[in-house]
Length: 346
Image (tube, rainbow, N blue to C red; front, side):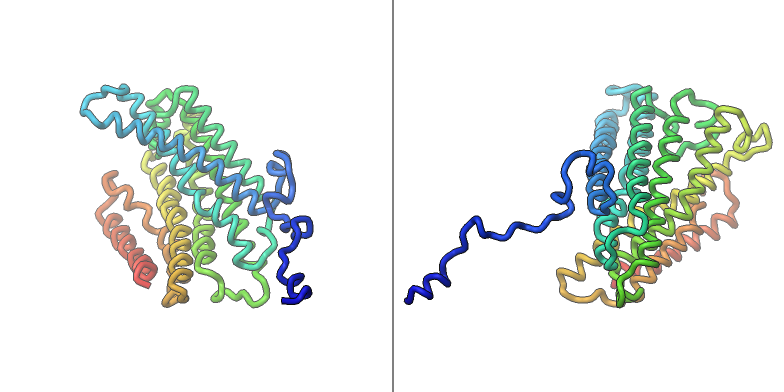
């Protein structure tokens, strides 16, 4: 072998090795660079840390509930404390973990990359949505430290407005603020998918992950304000007695449940549609095949979101709704099975 050949085979010196390119973690340093970032990937990481924190708190309440239920008698905690455990578990796990978990973390991280955009449409609003989430979470912890809430996570009236003395308004404010975080995230996704797709990224070339988040975002933007209105009315009824839900003042306690479940049933799909989008991408990637019936699966996400707005009263069958209402909402509920089956079997 010649001397020239030896020089070709010689390994490069460490000092001449190429310096790795900067990424979203190493691009800037310091806590302030994270707290003031506009980078969608960094905001996704901030959400991941925050959501994981609240997951463990909500999970701790779940563990305490199960320990109490080991025996029929209230051995571990009193009945009132058990109600508080149950309520705080529900509020934390639904509003601070399940609803934002996939959209705020994986969605924030991947949607701009998948549609070929540099970032989400409104980076500052994206950061604001995380701060609102943190404020909502902090208010929940404040309500917890002050003694908790025992209304159940649904804040059902008249229990929440007249008969309980716990920190309902603090917890309701937490849900109200966290709801705006959800609205801003959904708005960001909708605008990004509509207006910032790269050339050639048509609607029917877009990954199913983006379709599922688009459908979930419609639910966030249209459903969450209704919950916010209901929560504000509960607070006003507790403080100034406006009587919207009080039958003695011409109100209707069932009205609150209609308003609450109009959001909280679609919230089920806010939780599951992004997860279905993840499954679609994972199956497609590791089978190395395009998902069968791509167009049908894409439209099924939107169909599930739309049907989700018309089935809320199936949560109220034991509340005294008429037989005709029960029949109509039962039929509408069964119709959701059609787009859901398309997703599963495709």
